[in-house]
Image (cartoon, one colour):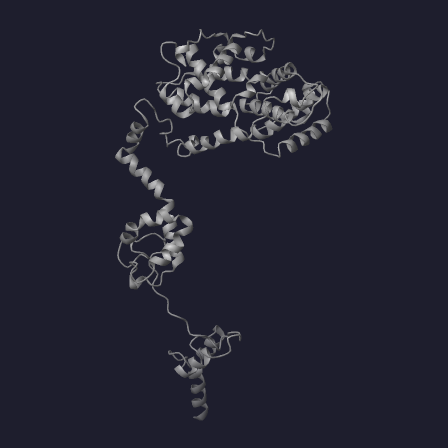
Length: 445
């Protein structure tokens, strides 16, 4: 009898949580463990125990009760008792949060977490971090919500009217993600700044180079046009190649015997940057009749990269030409390929002419569109309000560039370099090289 009481007393002293072995022993002996936990005195002793002591199966700490899990989306709840914040209150304070910015959200939130902030007592368990995340999410989604609301209410039509009655919004197509319509304006603003900081010196032939002339540079570019056609390179590769050549020559003295080596090296670098499948070094060596070895090309590649501080990107004429052609064809019912080919032909003619380094790439692109429109259609002014809005140039700003570009088109100087003209005399480019522009009137500017 004493033994049974002893066993019962020991069983009653056991904690509420048992191991599988202990449970199996109790079942085998026919004694079940108590349903209630340890006494309050035992619990106090366990809580006041050594905190550094490891918790074993025979000394389980009491668990804290958790509140019922409600909304885990960190977004303002629609029904009462499911959210962390009072949505109407927060929306009424939205102006202050917008002024605070992302960095000041935490500070504003702490100030608004006082008793008069609109937080409900039953939501006191929500942390400041969760509320901060909810506010950041609301701010990040603010533009998307406004855009969707504007599309439904026809605000975009109103914005077009505010731009001007004759200005067409070329960034209104938000369905094509490749156009980056929402960011296009900011992208081209940054490109206009970059074209000023990454320009080669327009007078490096007179100040830096002594063994190279302007005609040698033109012959090199004319030959590189043929190479790009041979390997079917994209136009951006050719523009970047010429830019890297001018950038290197404006900083480093170069002998004429190594000028061709510089040309194929810059095209190799530009191909790696622009092309999906760039030609190999052996192919560039072969096209020079193995005049240079692979080791010489690699050494020159290192020099070019160091001179540019490994900053290969620079906005070229081709970069802005795409934008301005889109603005020029905004009023057309269908795209005009002839206008596109003619503008590209005029822009590529400037690559061989050293004097066009005095003009910005964006100005050359705008002038190419101006002259191409005048060549194809003389019934209306070639520069409409939409082009002036997106190019940020007035006709008077383009007068000198357009006149110089027309001389190239008419080949007034009898230039013997014909690679670009031969390229655009092909049928696939609609033979735009055979076109000539009429006399430019002073009233156009």
